[in-house]
Length: 239
Image (cartoon, rainbow, N blue to C red; front, side):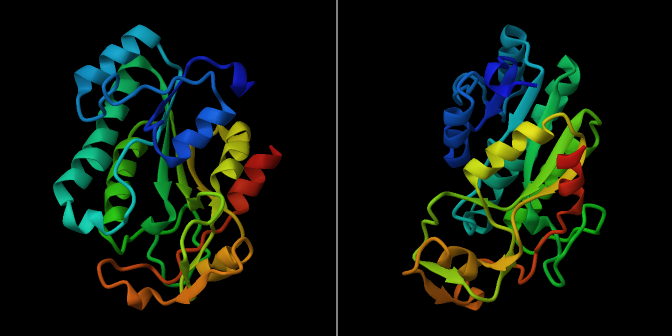
């Protein structure tokens, strides 16, 4: 599939950080505003689908950073990330469209690392619970792909980085390049880069980044090692 020429792909949440990168890479995708497609209202989603007749929905819309807002704004987190995703799935089912859902590596317990897609999940904070809630709806619909991602902006924007948290950070533009190769896949797929502490990842691109511990962040609990096993992704890229 030549994604740059594909006009039947809709991106929800296209005004967000990753959505902006997608828009530059794939300008022919449709990027509806919240006014055009409100994920909290089924009637709004259906109206947009009826007009545009999409084949694939890349679902990014939701509440994300700062991560501690999911502890403070529980209702909004549920409404956008769980109910909004459920609405998208129901409309995709009605119109026989595929949904690609961007979840997070934080759904894993975050204790031992190297988690496979088949391993048990157990979020440690409300953000991860809200994304897992969305996953529940998506998994009920077989014409779907769940991407458990660990991504960030280029360049790394934070002045401090955790020395005691291991993840698989990868930049937004790298995700775009991978998306072209996996867009026809279904099921669940871990998506990220090599396992590193957040500090070691950030230090590669910002020599001035300072060290910090996850214990210093009192407002939200971070899993210490939510690193993912990438073997399934590697096999998907080969096939």
